[in-house]
Each structure stands twice: as C-alpha cells, then as structure tokens.
Image (cartoon, rainbow, N blue to C red; front, side):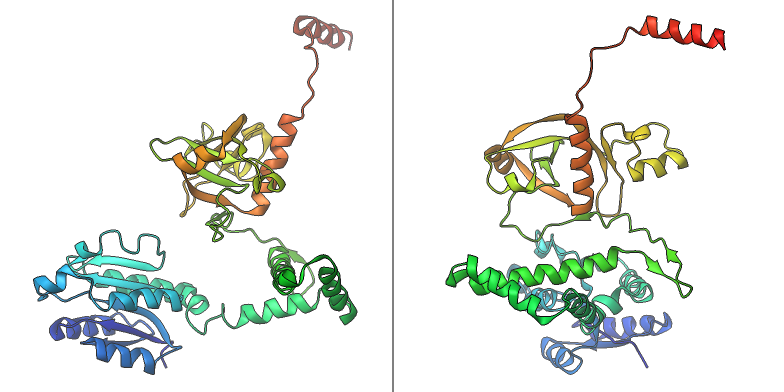
Length: 374
C-alpha cells in the first residue's frame, strides 16, 4: 500500500505516459495519478484529499496558443490555492516558465523547472522528501496536524495544578482590560502559554530508557527564522541589508524599546566573514561563541538558509527608523535564544569599566624578578 499520491496535470498524453513509466521504474512508494485536463485534476484532488503528497503542473502545454500564453493560465489559481491549503511540495514543470516571471518567488515549497530538464529531477526531489520524513510531517494529515496538536495540548494542560489557576488568570486579565479587548487578550495569553510550554519541552534534552540524559544538538538552521509578523517592521535580532550595497546591520535595540523608538541601536553585520584558519577545533569554538575565537563579537555559522557572518558588536551606532525602512530590507532574523545571547555579549562589551593602563615594562620586570627568585 502506497504512502499517498502524486497528482500530475499534463495535457500531452504521450508525455504523461512516459512520466508514468519512469515513475514506476524508480520504485517510489507513492501512487502516481496523471490528469490530462483541469476537470480531471479537480476530480483527483477531491477524491484523494488528505492523501496528496505532491502536485506537479504543466502551465499551458507545449501547443499553447499565443492568447493562452499572454494571459495567466487558469490553473495558476490552483497553485496558489494548493500552496495556501497544503504543506506539500508543488512543482511547476513547463516549457513556458517565462510567463511566471516574478511569480512565487517567496514560496519555499513551490519549485519551477523547465521542460528542458528531465522530470526525473522532480521525482528525485519527491523521493528525498519522502525518504527523509519531511512529507510525513508536513503534508495534510501528517504529524504537524496530528502529533503536534496532541503535544501542544498536553504541554498546555500540565502548566496548571488546578482549574482555579485558569479562572484566576482570566479574571486578572478581565480586571485590567477593557471589554473590547478582553477576549482577544485572553486568547493571545493562553496561546503563548501553550506554545512556550511546548517549546520548553522540545528544547529540553531527551532521556533514555535507563534515565540517562541524552544531549541533543539543534540543527544548524534552527536559529535562523523568517518572522511572519510583518506588522512589526523592525525587531530585536533582525538582520537588514541595504538596498543599494552589501552593507548589513544587526538590530541591538532591546525589545521594550524596539516597538516605540524612532532610532535604533544597531551594529555592523559582516556577511560571510569568519575567523582565519578554520580548523575543526576552531569551528567548534565558533559555534559555541567561545571568546578565544570571537572576542566580544559573535560569529554566525553558514547554513542552507543563510550564509552567516560576524556580528561586529564593537561597531555599534544609532540608525533612524525612517532610514532603515526606506533604504534597507530584512534578510533574516535570529531566534530568541541566540538574540538574547548576543545581547548579553554586547552588554559585557558595552559595560566594561576599564582602568588606567598598567605600565607594561614595569610589569614584565616584576615577573622576571619573581621568576628568578623562585
């Protein structure tokens, strides 16, 4: 029994038959369903809802008319709908990718591939998604919808020793909030409690059957995030790139000020910069922020989602909000954990008191004399 289905919309029957034969030879544990028109596609999507693991589209076919090429194809709407509704890989496989100029640029699960390339490239990617478990987690009905919901529920209910605590929290919010905002604030507060409870459990180490703690290391990409709250334009831990150059800045302004200030405390971010002589022991120290490698600064490792670099904490300055919004764009943000560590390191640099410098020659002489006595 297959683990799900792939639906492929291709209006050339001879191509579809070739693709079906190739897919069968690759022994991918999914059922391949070919559709020759939009009507068949709609039926297939409806019949296999909840089992779809990937979708492949041809935009208009190789025999498209000039009129068809000039306008957006009807089933582009299905690509957008598919992306919005399903957490699954979507492949646009067409000889007319030029009509998609600028489309789906920010869609991480939509892949565009020219028919000049073999469709096996797509099949290999689908196999990788399947073998790695990615599809099992993020596809409709996957672990993200089922197991995560259970874990979130369990983490939430265990935060309270008795139901009086929940009632008291609600009443406390009610006593300090107007009627119009009361319900929405209760919802946001309890949503944060639930998510933070689950996050705490997921970040804690695992324990084996003998009760021994197993140290778990987070993936190299996990501390890089794309903020989904675009209403907050600038936030602590953001990395911005200047539109007309390679200059980048890191937002150091504490969160309590970041939501209301007109000027931001920032420092330079040097993309791609790493210490000299990157031997294995030095890489380990770089990843842990060891001051023998990074000093007062903080290196960020390269990853599949961001190239990393150096947060130059000693090069801090103020930058007007208007200038950031007009001349820069946000590239990436750091996790709360990593941002907090960087802020702590900046504080240790900023608040060092310093002393009047020692006389180095005198100090050396004293050490020499002490050594001779011994």
